[in-house]
Amino acid sequence: MLIDLIVGARPNFVKVAPLIRELGAHSAEGGKMRYRLVHTGQHYDSRMSGDFFDQLDIPEPDINLQVGSGTQAQQTAAIMVRYEGLLLEKSSDLCVVVGDVNSTMACAITAKKLGIRVAHIEAGIRSGDITMPEEVNRIVTDSITDLFFTTTENSTKYLKRSGISEDKIYFVGNTMIDTLLFQLDNLIEPDFVAENNLSVGKFLVTTLHRPANVDETVGFMRLVQMIAKCARSYPIVFPVHPRTRRAIQQVGELPSNIIFVEPQPYLQFVWLIKNSMAVITDSGGITEETTVLGIPCITLRDNTERPETIEIGTNVLAGANPTSLKEIMAPLFDDSWKKGSIPPKWDGKTAKRIVSTLNDLFG
Ligand code: UD1
Image (cartoon, rainbow, N blue to C red; front, side):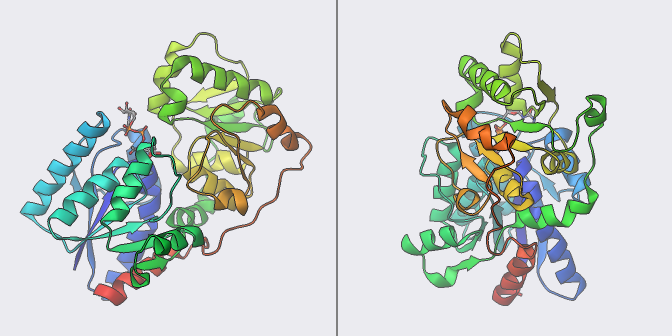
């Protein structure tokens, strides 16, 4: 039984690390399932990819398809052509994809068309916003998935309602949280924290990388200025995604309380959010991590595919054009932000459940 584990972009690495550990334990105990780690190369430089492999103890990929950047279609097409080439040379028995990036959808389609079963980890989440490339990736991937591993009760119910038979759906929890809990004792304080005299609990962290927020310079500048103003005089650490760098280079003067830094390796980034006062972001995955860490989070989007982070966790949806950001942020300054709790099965044991399910089915 050969399983292809597909990774392509930064959040994928965090999600597969615990699976690799569990599959390793499975074969050390005499289990029959083997895996092949396939990196599409969607993210390729050390800050977006290599550092994550090192810190999360992910072995070198068995195959790197090296597709690099491109438009949505170029990237998707390149992944499909190269992954098909690999499968035609040496096929596998199951293609495991995670999350919602282009690599997820491209490899799912390619495998399925060659008669290979597809398992999707983080299946069934929906933002309802079809203008996001990730939403298209989620819908297409789930439409051809054979085994659905879900992170939440909502996504499990959604899949059942949409007609997927119950015996294909496994509510297992969140592998991203497996990694978070596993690494909590290993976090690393970034050097710039001391260099900038940042005190624990007295700075904010911001990340922005969605095309809707960063591809248009004027709107991006307005957003950044608003965040800086609403943070009062608190410093804001802003790790800059490569996509966002372009916008930053084009805007004029930047607010002085924002500290722009390179994309952070995982252990440094989690140190930052864990020790921050709050996080302001347009990411989905980060809202899950802040929920588990109990750190206030403000999401600069009009919707989310992760409603539990709002209903159960510490997240608040402020909108993509947040006219009331000042009011939304007010509870941060008198320590009255909602406390939140942790969604069911976000307990660090999700990868164990997945490998045990795969073993029951195929082992
Ligand atoms: C992708 C995912 C998104 C995920 C994000 C995490 C899709 C549709 N989007 O968006 O869901 O939240 O990754 O980061 O799959 N670049 C580099 N170095 C790298 C990788 C990318 O400089 O290692 C540059 C590319 O050249 C490109 C830009 O960053 O100009 C965007 O990369 P891309 O992979 O197209 O999408 P992301 O915005 O990262």
